[in-house]
Length: 332
Image (cartoon, rainbow, N blue to C red; front, side, top):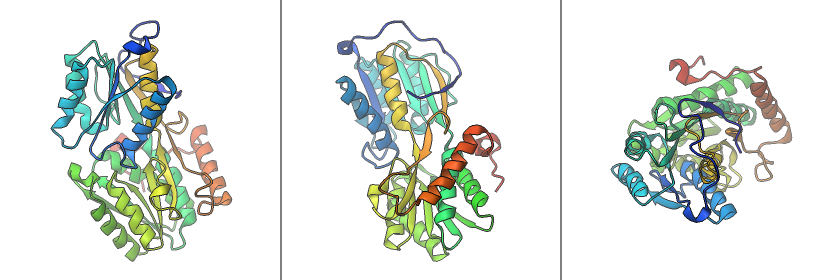
């Protein structure tokens, strides 16, 4: 269970006593890219699957293929008697806000949103800048050229938050490093353009980058494969993306959306659901980096020791990673 910082409205539990499993009907609406996107949606799916495996409760699901389907899908889940509906991603914010108002007796949750205000809505926000700082440290340690790259998806403050944290980690480790950065686009299609992601990655490699971090959803698959094709290293995001290009993924910045999904359904089933915002960083086990047997030859024990030292310093308050969202600026 996540250790969460709770703020916002509706902090009291909605009722007491667990709901009988036969009467509990959870639902999830995945966003563009689908539940097997090897990134954000798939991270959520992992949490949904863990819930189903542990409880035997089936979760109703829908995979959005166009923007117009978001509100329709959320509404349909509520109409079908869902006990709780989980929306995946900030793009579903307007839709879930509207439907939550229309169905006040249904519980709703959404990931990557923190600005809504409904008494039956739980929101999850993450300290992506903290996790990105850690992989920035790893990138700087692994780079042989002193130049590393970043490819973002849609150019929005959330992705600038990833970039700013990454830059801080890189520069704290190697003050002489260069960070190249590109965003894929300004529309939602920027999340699902692996061809463009590969093109941007090759351009950064041509300019000297030998490690490239992406925060670009499905576009990032192109980033990882292009880096691998060029004999360089990639850093994944959201889920462990080592399997996309084994031997070429230095690490991944884990955004524990799986825990958010799992906790949403378990809390709702146990009548422990609360509304408000849960803000999850390293301390709350909401973000992390991958260090396991798969990448031990790339991310050496010495590198892991330095990344773990940065991680401990962030938790202890000795390192304060600047949050781009605070002032829409990055000090690096």
